[in-house]
Length: 286
Image 1 (tube, rainbow, N blue to C red):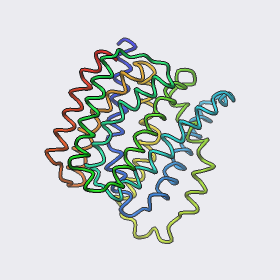
Image 2 (cartoon, rainbow, N blue to C red):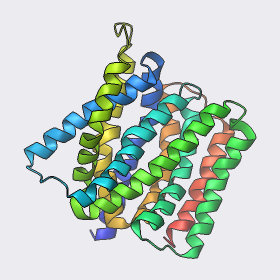
Image 3 (tube, rainbow, N blue to C red):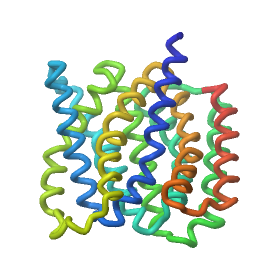
């Protein structure tokens, strides 16, 4: 298996893991406050990352890497989890998943700005068309549902794309699992006070499904998924492998329908299909 293929395989595994993030977060925020959820999932993942770094005796990152690690942490450890948790108080998981269709374009843009990649001009055409299908869905049917929720999801996508590209750039030197582990550890001084300050008065009413959702986003969404994702971006290219994220809405919509019994509208499916079709064409020029 060549390097590019290994990159796509790792990237696909990461996307499969991330596909469960929105449904899991939607389940968790029903009983768990979003700010507490953001803090506690970061603390749990940071503890696991710290154990990994200690077990494999990883050296501390250089001072020159700290800024990139902070950007990565702000994007994928704090920004995306917090903004999506807040958005999912206003949106269904199925509705929010469609916005993930914008992630490939955001990741590619930051891959150029932060990672130095230069895709073919045709790549941008198809990426923009794919993203336009998602934006059209939101404008024609989704924004009326909750403007606040949609704006939060758009902000989450932007900061996540930055975190993906920044982390992938740094992974070329440090390694994928090392980058996400150090980003989690760096975020711990912020996540721990956030957890303590927003600790609910009573957790006895939290349902089993909410605890399962918390466990998933803490272990898989915050750590394990990134191990595969960053490795895929490094081996296959940020812009190219980043297009795999257009498969995430399909997977996520299916999970939301099966696990949460949410309605998946025809408009959602059409928008997602249009985005995936355009990105499949963009892949040829990435």
